Length: 42
Image (cartoon, rainbow, N blue to C red):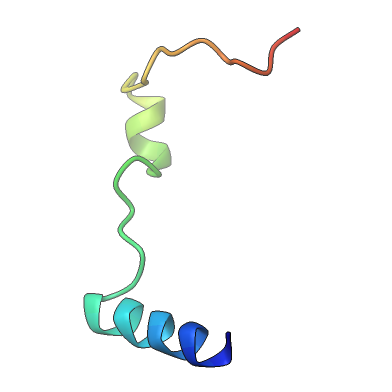
């Protein structure tokens, strides 16, 4: 497990981190939403 975590950390570092696609507050505020219903809503 330790080797896997180190390998994943190296992959993320080489890729420049986790991409922010879909996680940008400015786009959400501008109205760019997926418009999917929340499956957890009761």
